[in-house]
Image (cartoon, rainbow, N blue to C red; front, top):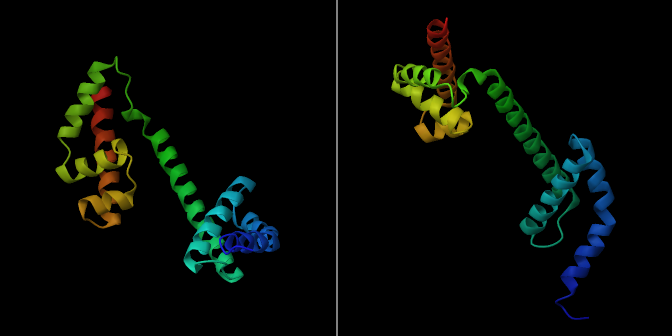
Length: 163
């Protein structure tokens, strides 16, 4: 048998022997079957590359677990961003409402520069607090508190203006 087909046969045999138990574990670690399959695929590719061939089962299980945790965190962060977007619909103005847009622009100009920076990066730039903190070279907690202060300031200013 040519040596070029040996790694392929080794892979196929190893995968056939272990796939069902890896998938079972991935299903236990994730929220749905599709996520389990995605996590398993990522884990298999990563461990195969890292091991330079057939990986140990323990390494695959550990990688599945890490990938599932990462996926869960990404999903939770996305849900939080979507929820925040729904909560801050006050700032999503229809284009035909020029007066409101002008008021928002004026209110933004009155924010301190550091709050305006964070608000722009987070809300309109779509960055996470980690990314905002990295971009501005500030702690993540500082980015989050500046964002909250900016939103509260805008809420107070615009509520007073609109009433």
